[in-house]
Length: 596
Image 1 (cartoon, rainbow, N blue to C red):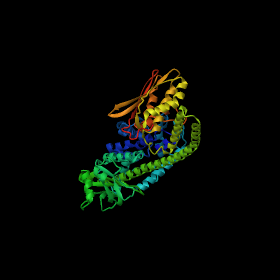
Image 2: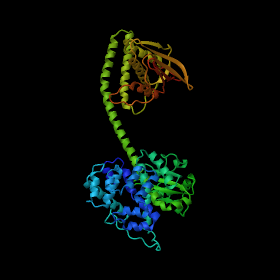
Image 3: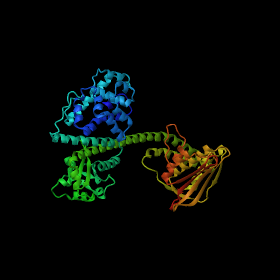
Image 4: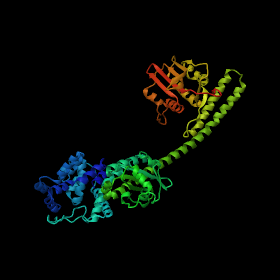
């Protein structure tokens, strides 16, 4: 009731309301245990007496509400929960001045003990800290009553017709007459209720996990904490559903990584537990254990094994194999139903996370297919104008004399091919990197200077200084990736520098780092510098909004450099300038010469 009212009124902590309602009369249990028969006789007539709280104080020196709130304080729970328990019998004129949680618990108690027409209920509703109508509260109460009856029916508990109002308690038997022992049904019911109380929080915790690895790890810890079973191994049913394996389960004895147990009851207790859908143990078997089970016992360094099947209604998920001693099993015998439920909860949780992962993969595949289709369209549409431009350049090249202009047209044609290649790779973006070849780094940089030095630097009155060796320097890289790295760095420098500034491009051979041979390409400038935040984009991807472009160049440089094995260092000071150094792996040997 209390939680339902909390949800109805949008109280932000419905679990606190549930806990307060659950514990609101716990003080009666404490007094029954401490005082005994006098308190039992008092409770027998208390429900018919509206002044019974005052009499409780007079007879016993305290009320059950005070005792309950004291206990909650001792447990270290929130003081507001203790307040809700302490105040649930307070007069209505006092409770309307309390905070929200005590008002909710007071109303829940009143709706189950007072008549609907009681003026106290009406006054509490009118002056409550939240807005709610009596009709809504009564409907909430009826739903709670119906749910309680359904739960009682499932559990075999008889609920009287006057519920939720208490029936008058019968006087207890004479102290000289021993109380009758619990029946087997009552005993089983007690065990079942205890097990439900123990395992329900576990189920909620497991359902909140996001992967099968997290669930399996949580199952290990739960088995250790709840059942004192530190030696466990987990076997999962394979995709063909004909064997138990542990290939995908880590942190287990090596034997389990090698095992594949056929799903035949005669081969192992683990398989028999799954097929028979019940907990199986070596301590209940009078026959010699199969060799596989002997291996399990030895691997877990135990006297025997207990196998808990992990089953849902429609699917076999696997088995939890627990290594334990005879004494441990003797203590666990009465908790076998709990262990069976533990296996069911484990199976349901595993099935849920696996289904979620399968759905995520399906969504990813659909998105990938959409991307590939869209990329194919872009490649097709972009390829047409690029092909036309390239054809006209060839016509123009044939018409021009053989001088330096032809070389520039050749570099321009190569750049058009590179753009087409970049667009074409969109369809392969999710399939891995491009092939690296041995290329001459000096030749590539000279071609780039021929094509871009004027537009990026000289047109903006930025002075360019170069220190490039005359000899070839072979490196093993993807040519297009190298060009994209260099172009992005030069473009960033061009955008940052103003007239009168300079950029220096230098190449140094025979650099040894960690025993490997590299070529160093340095780009220095005397511009405004790069912020620490933007420098980080060289080392981690940048998440961009649809309209955001700043910083994407450095992010692309970092991504391509990692792909090619290029090491990057960046030093920058505000107002002084920036120095970016690329350590490019040098080709070990080139049989036919580097590609120019």
